[in-house]
Length: 102
Image (tube, rainbow, N blue to C red):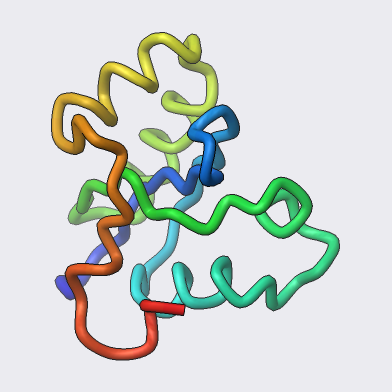
């Protein structure tokens, strides 16, 4: 993974719930979501365990701006963004080796 930060979307199995987040370590953060490390979190409550979209941003401040922008988008726009890179809403973390395959 590259330096900087990642803005990402996690989805549930039915793709009807999306969580937008930001992290400096995408693989570790996805693993945390998948393992419901915080049982009271949004992703645990709604079972958002699929990484369906991510983008790298070189500067953490710009990543925060981008995350806020995406959180304010209409659901239709989020769907279009996801489908522009991941039309089948596959779990992108399954392409990685290691523990993200939980």
